[in-house]
Image 1 (cartoon, rainbow, N blue to C red):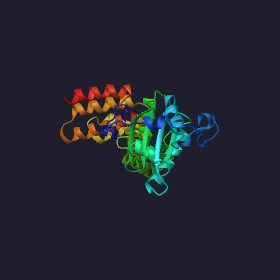
Image 2: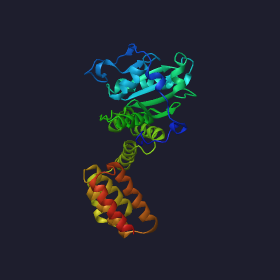
Image 3: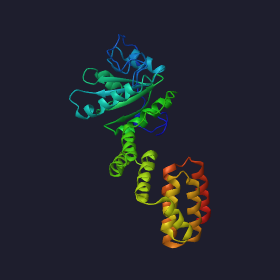
Image 4: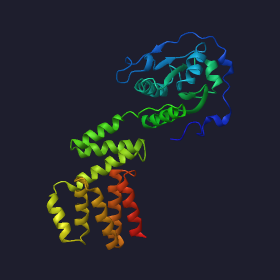
Length: 301
């Protein structure tokens, strides 16, 4: 997700003129509070979601955004897609604990605000930082993408917050740790369908494959067999898997890089793909992976 301050968006149609709303009178807006501050998912000061009108837009959105990013959700009672998106936004706002505020605008009751923002269809969502719009999107988007967008908005607002645990990943990880590999695979693949190239889901899926490959294997017997038959590709691959599971990933990488050097054709490609799959488990930022990738490149070229 790019920084929303430089993201190409609907703002290419022209600047949003908010001047007509800046002078509107301000009265307190109804506030939907999350759990009390200090509790999980609680919002700072109890504010997480507010209903905004033309009279309160200046104080609750423009002025508030000078210190706290504000996400404006344009909706209407008759809008079915809004009923899909709005509850997710509200839940994420409460989960954010006050790091940002969700301002809900009923377009039927507040047509001037919708006109100022050139809202042509709903749901329409704007991010306001420092009194100005910084990014927007329309329609319903997957929760994973929505989380990334909100994180980018927070970054634009200079807010540093810990990324909350993705419940989808927690469910998948629990299935993996519990040994239900089929359920874990389905869960990881679902995440990847919604968020392609999600590194955590890719690593989890690679772990599922690893667990299936070593199922029923005798670790010591596998290592002994690999030592006795250094050119047996399948024996070396299984030994590398055992080493990764035993916390000896760097040793496994070295084993397979050496095997790449000794093989050719289909066998070499099989070993390379297997090694890359093991890299996925650890992630690209692991120093051992970075070193092994350089060694693999040298072995290949």
